[in-house]
Image (tube, rainbow, N blue to C red; front, side, top):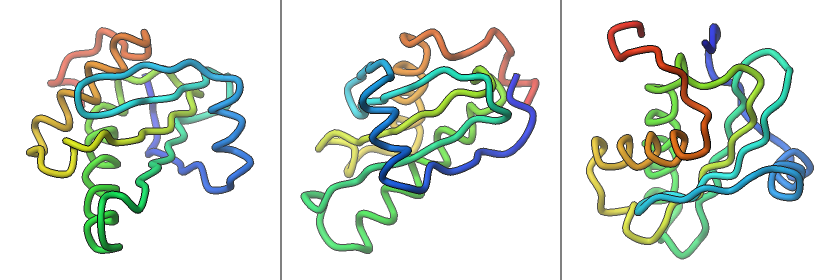
Length: 120
């Protein structure tokens, strides 16, 4: 489905548009906001608040969440804009738990295609 690498949502304006116009799904470790569209690739933003601790901890969590979405990118509908926000328990979760939680939220939003893991 998604042919290219993940692009990033960069500006506050882009984040606000996804929050205002998009849908919301949650799982035990993350909340995703999404806005289906017809632009090229999948665009991703990760919002990690200061409550997660120092900049080092927040950036580590941000990288892990970005990678969890990247692992599923080929199955995500093209043109979708996604904002991932972790829940408190995400900071202590393993990568496989984070990935599973992201997959669960994206699946409940209907954003994942049927392409299997071997197709990556």
